[in-house]
Amino acid sequence: MKKSEKIIATIGAIIGFFIVAGLIQAAIVNNGGGGRGIIGLMFLGVIYGIRSIWKSKSNQDNSGDLPMKP
Image 1 (cartoon, rainbow, N blue to C red):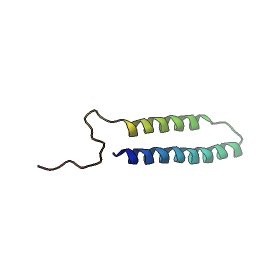
Image 2 (cartoon, helix red, strand yellow):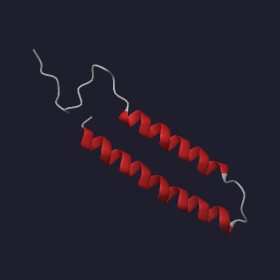
Image 3 (cartoon, helix red, strand yellow):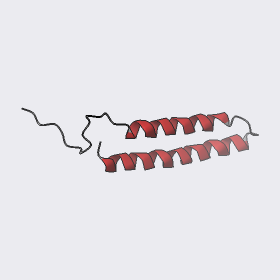
Image 4 (cartoon, rainbow, N blue to C red):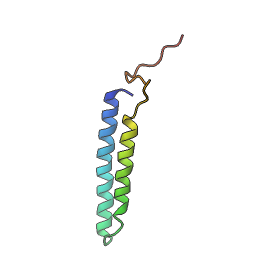
């Protein structure tokens, strides 16, 4: 993955988290509260998802070019 693709994916994950978490929080407040642990679990999922996006193998080329066939 190119660095620009990783940045776009990271920004998308963060914006998506805020949108979904906001909707869930609004539903929780309208139903009388409780159940806030789901947002924490979602946050952990986003953190580990971003970590896996940026994780690269030591021999991985981040240029985005496809390998040449012999």
